[in-house]
Image (cartoon, rainbow, N blue to C red):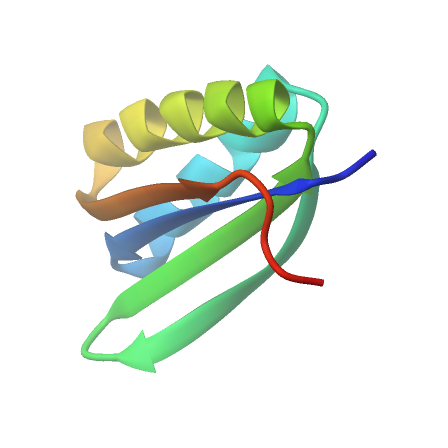
Length: 81
């Protein structure tokens, strides 16, 4: 059951791509998309079980921080359907 939403926001596309790659490799999550909001900010989002999403966002944040500028990480355990 995919009942959690995880988001990582970076400044720059390279960090966002690195985060997305690390997230899907680190845990059983599904990449659901990306949003660009101007000013170079990119948010990537994943869905999955709460534990998997937490593990994925931890891995993604570390990866994004190595190659770019990590701005924010957030996990919503049970977003409204």
